[in-house]
Length: 578
Image (tube, rainbow, N blue to C red; front, side):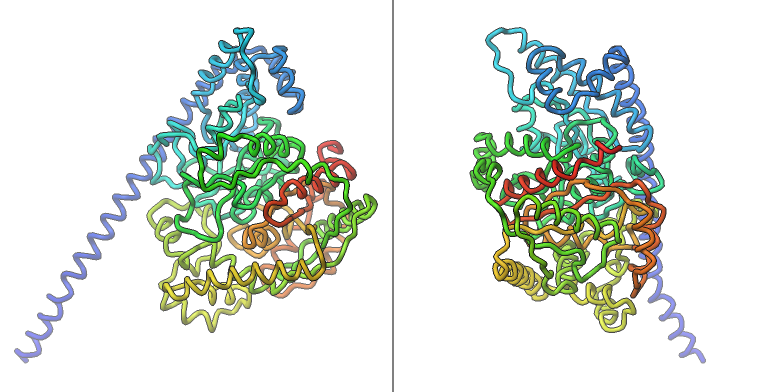
């Protein structure tokens, strides 16, 4: 009896260290979250002061004058600033007002950049000298995604733990914009970790679609797309690692473009997942039409200083011969990528685009995406880089409201549990993704090998049909309602492909959802919860914009821009109709 009692005591005493450790962890975690909540509360107060400053500033300009300035299209605005018809200070104030109004509707602006007024005044002072040669974007206000570094501004990436950590310098792209005469004037909202096509985070809250506030604006450059669509910016700079420019552009009825990774600076950038080797984030423009995107990229790629600043960036200037060419091209197309059938409106948009391109003299050829299930699975593996370890640890150390959740909870589980689930997970497509997530260095090497092999296979498939470019849906469905992106990964397969293979790709709005699309929707067969979500989110969408996507190989960006321009010009912009 005494012996058993002693053994019991030893057992209890042995558990004490574990209990103390567990209690300490709970207390430490609680204190950490309380500190984060204090930071969020402080940022909300700072944001209120920042918005009051902006309001006091833009109210110095007559409202009618402000409306006249913001009504100008990009080229007209640029010319008016060049000839002195309007000045940089009043232009910034005019767009501050418009951005303020857009934010009241959609919550698209994180903070107004207070240095913008100093920059505008400096430009006006320089312009007083008759010998001063105005740079090409003199006085043009430009909006910047919050993840892109602006000196003295936080780039939180939506994490509350990154509050009060201001950037010490501008990113290369922001420095270039300032060198070209532009004025960065707002930071715009994004989803936490930048890995969602929703747009919500614990720091700045949720951004809504300007065309239907019950739906998402797209992500991760959702603040940009909402702001540009409402006229609060004539040019926005976003980033794209899985569709983060093209998706929000298509959801909000504007144009967006991403180049291949070798045409945009990578030096000094902060990635949402550092160390991700083959799927690099690419900065690019969002604007009301593709002409504005093209003009920005022309200026960007013709700036020799940029290539001096980033020695890893190939010094490839804007290729006028590609953009101005009238040579007929051979273009592949598909309405279904074989992984996720797109909703009927997006299939129709491709068919309409194919007809337009045929009428322009191009040859259109049906194309099948090679190994679509494998494609999307290795994209997810490459996007998380290490099986989700870094991402999930970062999220676990932050405050995650339901709307901001990352949509693949399996990645939160320990690796040994994931290995078991690889065999038994009920959803076939989710199971394939789990099977590709790397859990050790050997699996990570094999993941990179699979991505390299897939790129090779895709190019061979294009070569077999002698294709110059590809036309396809811009997304799998219309902008879903808030909270849905967490439950519907597969719809992003149409954009993710061109990050996986590092192609240039852009989107332009060409039509709208109509009643006939909803009738076609009734014929769609469903396999799993993702299919069912596509169908349910495609209902009651009359009038929402539908975009088409065009993609081309690396260093064929200008050819891609040419095709986007041809389609946009021939079919007519969504904004011309509405």
